Length: 537
Image 1: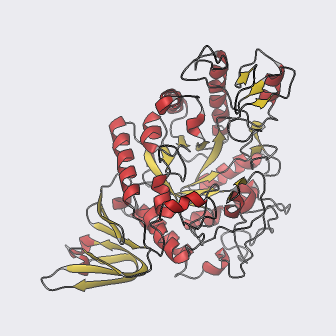
Image 2 (image 1 turned 90 degrees about the horizontal axis):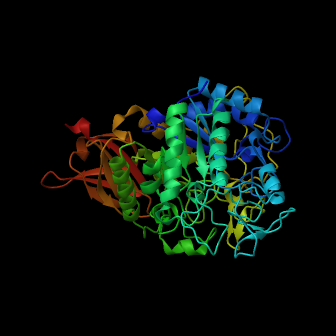
Image 3 (image 1 turned 90 degrees about the vertical axis):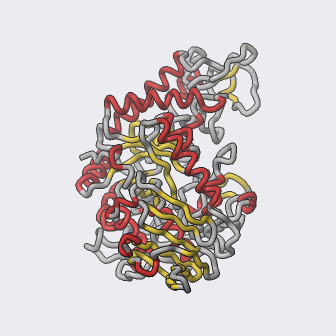
């Protein structure tokens, strides 16, 4: 049973699962697909519409599965293709769509495609040079020569051609050469295979990286436009979501959604970093140059984010094919909302923004209970990218706690041994928050329910920004006011009609009526309010 998403992205709440860390059903210490299936009642209770699984295909796991050795088969540590079909079927029964992670730009160096290409000079599925080239790696096979990697050296770049040719660099092939054409056909075959097993779509890894030396991503955009046309024709209702980081370009190109990300050239990463960067240097000291809005010090500003979102929304509207901006709480590649000096109080405010802004929210597993980035987590499966940049701290096991059997699942899953558990004895758990209606878990659940119930929170509903600092305030649909204060001091905002408004969700809220009839919203430190001004009419 496949749940279609294309027509309802405006209300969709996505939930990202790192499969090896989420839930282990067979007791081998690694999370698996049956474990996720056993947690579907929890996800349905939370209210999410779709889950996105990080890569779960056959892999040597040099990069935690982003080095794929077989795109058509589930890695044994996660289960089987039949387990995937059962997951999509059971998720569909609960109205939840399943998205997989498509690593479109490269393979593992253990993939049969690459091994064949390394032995055959006439095979151009990968980018090969007969002479040394900076950044290329020596080939392992009879062919000799050197291949271009896409990320780590063990991830050879699939050849989608170059936008600009150069006779002095014969490894640059045109985008319509046989190798690039074969790879585009393979992408369609891979997607169709999993669509046949009930998958609703894909999040595409490094989606902008396919065509090389492509100024303005013109040829890469054309490629994805062709993929979108094929998708709409052959698999209507299925979606493709990109890891591109520039929805102003990627969504008009053909993607249904693209996330703001913490990285990207031409300052593409600034919108997200201006919101969530914790400035602690635990991932990359350079990020401290961008003060975070969601911080107690209140030195940031959401203006950068708002301007980038507006530019993307305008470009998407002008293109006329639909699509949305994606706004993640975090993901497997960068720090969680709770990280460094930022605690769950600021994260609570951040969740309100993520789930009330006109974008598609993506909640990273565990962010709904306030799991933290854990410094010092052992480097695992390629997680370390630099002296101060190790992604393992964002990939620690889901903190279920002693969940009673029969309560949203079969009880606590087996203890994960993929990575150590957060050693903090006060670490948050699902079990501890399940019956606490004041908890972060219930806060996120209430926000998701509100987003689904109130059409003013649809992506297509208008937004009017009232302020971008402290507080950050905006109107949705003309009459739904959202006022946010992640900072550590009280803030005030004049807001007509606030005194008679109905507070749908609020913490630290007080409304003052000043002389002359002016209403002023006052939020305590780390406060928030979602106010229905229509009730004042």
